[in-house]
Amino acid sequence: MSGGEWAILATLMALCLGLSFFLSGMETGLVELSRLRLRRMAREGNERARRLQGYIDQPEDTLWTILVGNTVANLFAVLIWLYSLQNLLSINAAEPSALFKSNSTTVLYWTLFIIGTFFFYTLCELLPKMLFRTYATRLTIFLVGLFGVVDLLFNPLVKIMRALSQMLLFTTGAGGLAGHLFGSREELRQMMAESGQVLTRDERVMIDRVLDLQKIPVRDLAVPFENLPHIDEETPVIDLIRNHAVKAYTRIPVWQDGESSRRVVGVINLRQLVFMPENEWHRPAKHFVESALYQDEDIRLQKLLSLMQRSGQRVVIILDKRKRELGIVSLPDILKSVFGEVKV
Image 1: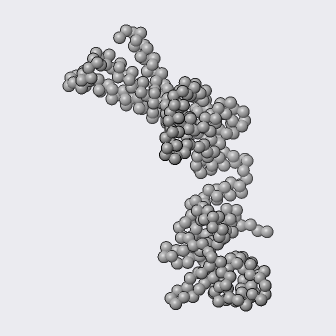
Image 2: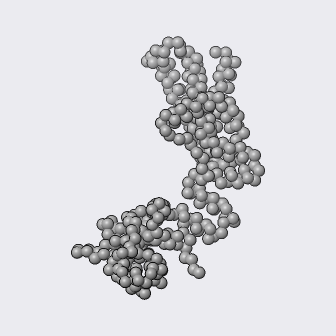
Image 3: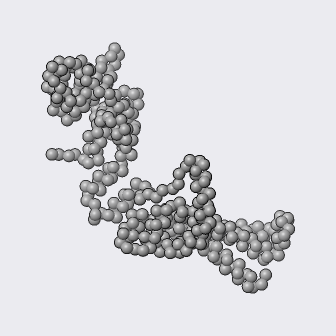
């Protein structure tokens, strides 16, 4: 080949490598950037941040642009590299068997191809991902204009691929991607750290407690039955009103004595008993027992709260590993774990 042809190949190779480097970095940067910081910059009038926010709000189209662009760049880079090696080593490309002959030329050909592949992976995959992971927000905002050009160039091909993917999703019943303000709980914690002057200490503590609900087992909040008044199912209502109507708990477990063991049959609402007609006070507690929710001690508070919301129960009986009653957890207990002690 002439010098001009080599120059054209070198230029095309540089463009392909540069595009692959850029899109590989953007792929990592869009995941690692601080979305809170980006939204704040967009609200403050930063045009680049506003454009980047637009791409993040349309994650499916953005990822298709990166995928299509990176695939095209990598494919052409490999083809150019193979074509250059064949011309450099004077290998007849029209004869495929020439690439597999046992001679020094083919050995050199495949050696250079493997070395080139290694350098390509290092320079166009690992390096940009490391770089954009370290400076995610800064680099993605700075290069959003270049990404807009790439998005415009590959837009026709992206539309075709998106249409095909939508047809596939329609046939399988799956859904597309959706954008989210926070990618994880750690990102929300980072937001609080960056907004220290906006949130008060109590607000930060409260948000931390809400985020920790998924980690706290319910046994940590369970009130042992030893700390609660003992109510038998045969106890008259009038005794409950006289002795327990001013207790902190309005719903207290009711016990039933069996032949070999005792068990909780439900809970009784002390507040409801107070407003009953007096002619009902002589009846035993078992006639006013409400059903209760039973859960294992290992369930997390976040899941327990969801179960209580769906069932409408305000008190949960906690069972140990042997399925024996361990204690109770009420809705006020969970709220106390979030808001702390409220004194009036």
